Length: 92
Length: 300
Image (tube, rainbow over all chains, first blue to last red; front, side):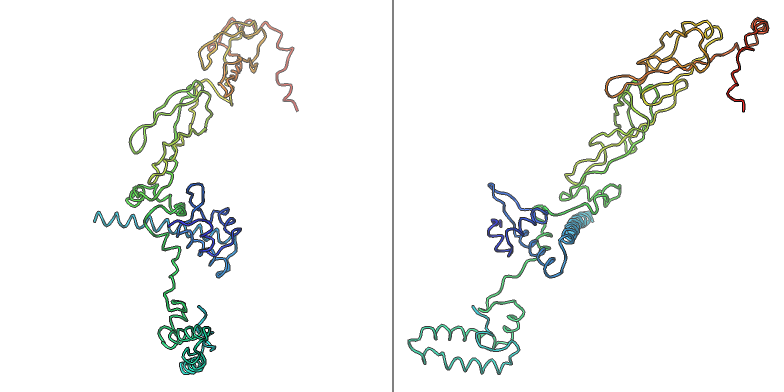
């Protein structure tokens, strides 16, 4: 389900400036539909993750970028590994 | 809906007895049948009853304390963590990043092959380096060379005229295949220019040692000189010596701007290979060698 920016701010409990800053940092990459930015449920969850990193785990802004990059790599790896395992199993 | 502890006016640590006492005290005060006509009391009584209903049930109370249900007893929406979305195999995740292992797909083993086939994985293929020796003259005039690839197949490489030794030619998209829909890498072909028996090269100039006879050097002559693009006739001026350098303009290597370097011809005066009695007699009668000392700069 896609949400508008306004709805996203409410769901993710974010200030508008904070959201703009995160998009600027490419921590969040919203989609676009009919000239309006749209956010997925994954974006909401990702915003909550960023909030947790900053507010609960005490990671500073530089650190958040690093953590997100590593998290994204891990998910890339997990996807690739899943594909490989599926492929191996289908051959076996 | 307010916090049920607050509604009942008790601490979060209250015992079941305390809860019951607090409820009864409030219920006696607020019960609608004891307060007919007091609408507010009725509302508060409902609230108090709901709060008691929740907190008097040990199981529900525990779930409320853990935040699993709200004050009305309704299930709170479970937070979905980012990982739940990131691992969904559905539509591409724009954040996903393969830079941590894209190089795995460069090798030739089974795992790499599987990675390459994986539809979701997308990364540019690696660049592949090749080494191509070419002839001296091919480097100057340009050429087309065919590389035979180790994994089979060939690659045509166009050598631009005037290429330098050690220069690397980049052939776009001729490297390792990409992973998934990723683009292939580039082929990087490093050029080595083989030496030439006559010519030496420095940048865009070509150097040649040209032997001349004694009489050509002393009297001057027209001689034929090899250049990278064929022989030309050159005037050796009268009184030339070993070490005299003559410049053939534009007979060197083409430059990028379309101009050409020069060929620099270094004269070497060469005596006849066999001793020549006539020459010996002539030089024996020549007194001129007393007049100069070619080793004067070596004296200490």
